[in-house]
Length: 553
Image (cartoon, rainbow, N blue to C red):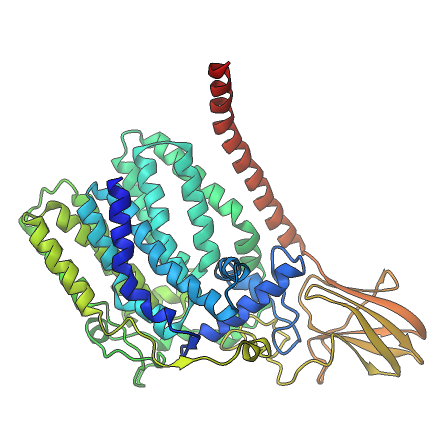
């Protein structure tokens, strides 16, 4: 009951951080409009029965885009719940942003309470995780629902890892695996950022555990189950990335994006963009003065009290903090070049979320072990909220009618980097999904889904038809039930679009976006993992149910 009251108080303290999100309509930001359009696309794909949702036939001006094959789907799936209960598309995305703040507070409280065994310490650490410049930058400057949701879900994974070192219950394995699934599908970039910390804490918890072998086994099971359940997303995204323009467009994007050490300490708040090296940046890269002060105090405390019972946790939190600083500075460039997947982070300043996470853990340890807990608690609580008082607000409202968003059909990414190598950002809107580009005839579209198109075609002379969707492995075209050869590498306006020949007469043309072998494998791994998970749940629940029946009889 006391924990519930503390959580309710924590939620109350979170309200100032989200109050600007209740202003009607949208607001100017880097990515909010992109997320609204993805929300619209998710609603359409699910209504058409496409699951897992992968290909949007409407984005890129109607020429198609593998939006959820490579872009994290959980924010839009979560937003769909809000949309179905009556919110419009903009408010559905904003609801995800609001949820990210409240959820992160609860998750951080659970993690720190399990680790420090102190409600006071866990409460303050949660407030430090909520009230940090990077958290407000993600929401009010960038408007990135995925990053916001990913930051909210990270503490739940750390909580499950901690609990598994204390209790080998299957339910913590399940909680940890589901947290990992949620994190991977919420924001794969956040997953990459926290991977070293997740592995580090896992190793530390095994070392701390009284039953190291059992803890190692259970953590291994948790990770395998989580990776298996989320394989439908990360496996195709990983192995089909080579087919995209991503490397060509993005290149070594991060190489010009490193903040300076001075900017990490203090830089003015702004609503602009991160600029290449040498140009003035429009946003702030500051960690937060109060968060920095906590790290300095913790290091001083360790020098004074070298035999602290939580020395390993202190070293873990301080190590994670300095790792994040290192990876944000240009000195780490060789690692960015050679460590797999690190380049996906794109902006080194995103490691600020790891800095704040480490600082939040550190302040919890300080409150746990310092004397005069309540005076220090009240002082730090006031300072961290006061220090961020100018950050929890939008720049300007942007509130067009919903029809504005419904008519927008870009790629929902800045550079169209997830287009196929042979694709391009379309400058005009597609003239229907099927179009005669050679010969004479007429086309009547009878089914127009993102992953399935049907058309009745009447041809007066041999013709060339074009499926106005950029080719990507999985597209199959049939004429009168027989698969036909398509050509998508023809120079000119049709380059990348799917062309095929069709003879005289009336024909039924069907085009479908089906699974490739890697997608089939990924879906089957996730299905098998789901069956295993469901079987284990039943195995845990069924004996208790039977026992209750036996006792009652």
